[in-house]
Amino acid sequence: QVQLVESGGGSVQPGGSLRLSCAASGSIFSIYTMGWYRQAPGKERELVARIFSDGNTNYADSVKGRFTIARNNAKNTVYLHMNSLKPEDTAVYSCNGYLFTSGSYSYYWGQGTQVTVSS
Image (spheres, rainbow, N blue to C red):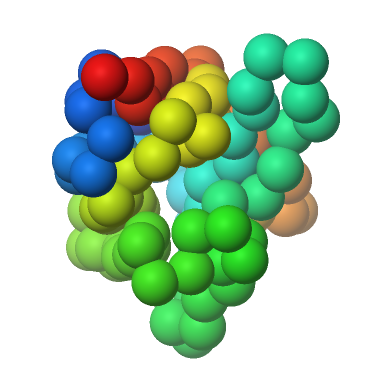
């Protein structure tokens, strides 16, 4: 059974930093992308950042220059380093992976972790 387990959410003041981690486990043969999405109350889920197997990355315009996504291939783990956090970054952050398991690629999701930015 494939699982994505997130950690690192919490509450922080504006301007602060947090690091999210997402570890993929199970019968995973390869990973094409891993990334982070977020959903704030009353808003649609949006892509925050993702990293491809070749190391290329995508970021939402709203987080460019503040967030950095990184990946440890040996541990099947992706990290999201979030700096200069703003109240508008408050959301549930969910890890997503496009993984090759059981003979095909499929999308997998973590359970989500709350990030709250407030003074």
